[in-house]
Length: 384
Image (cartoon, rainbow, N blue to C red; front, side, top):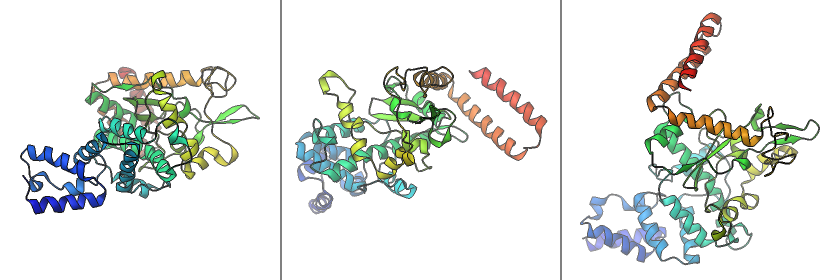
């Protein structure tokens, strides 16, 4: 049981933040049944303000159970307030780090809370409401752009927990999947919308973000909602990134999915909540990046036509292979990482780091570089 005065003070503080009395009573009744006290259980006040923390999730569930459409919107307003979500993201690294600091550091990309949070949003904005310029437009804009914050947090979580020295993001992601063998990850969803390029009408050639010679960004989902995008070098592509977002990242980066996979029974949920909304609520810095000074980056068309994703003769194709087949090849390359023992991934990362340092320091030692190059090639062949 709780001392009455102590409990009342805590309730008042939590209510002043925005949590409702009924939810607080329910959560603390459950905690009291476990024989715990306020002092034993830690700083509830701090956890209640940290998005996705265990106590935050308990309060959210208690609120969510009894929510109406307007109640769900009020709960989402509270969430945006607690993370200090701006109305418009700037893409600035300092802003990104401040936002990440407002999310629980142990909130994993596969946590069931992401599905619950998405359900609350769909309850708050049914049907096509989320992409309409009416109602609480500020909240809609914040929540749409929060998708980019979530994807950034999830990629950074993988980096923080699995990326060892010398590893690529792709290798870290593979290590994460291997550490949780039951994860429902999938490569099935199309990467088409994440492979935008500018098609020069004179040359009929594709010009890719960051001046890449080629592009085959791949998409990997967990439980449909969590989304990772990787480029050909094995780097996470995110629209905001504390390590610095590339042009490719801003244009083609990951965005958390609020909707469910499109099915006849859910009225094109993914299209309504995730595909339509960027045209309405995207931040200015991303819209400018995609416009690219009048040389707009566009996705391949979803067909086999002259600009089609599956056409081997499209400008998006390379060396007779359609953009679709290029992506498939990159997915196959990533899957090979999943077949390798974790220690081999670490050894490969260390070897690569040594090679890079050696090359930088001994640039003029052609013979040694040649020998190391041959050894590195044999090493790669042995693990492929």
